[in-house]
Length: 80
Image 1 (cartoon, rainbow, N blue to C red):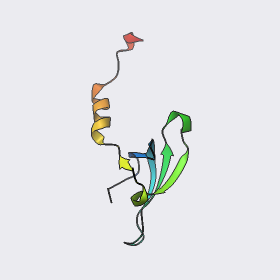
Image 2: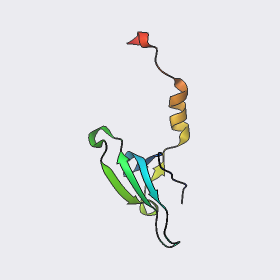
Image 3: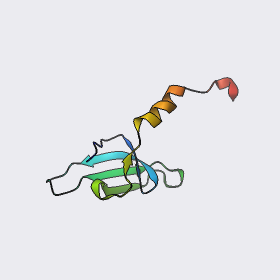
């Protein structure tokens, strides 16, 4: 399993979600339950619970994507 933790942004079922809770595998044979909150405009805040290992396209949004946005900084207020 990928190390998924609360507060990460993930992509599941072609949408971006915020990880709200991670319930680790109770046993080796079981899956990790992840509670998510949608970040998309048309479904903002809608909750979804998934078994992480069972999701076909689930992935953690790479830190590099968010780091590059954060490194750009803010726009100059005079532009507005």
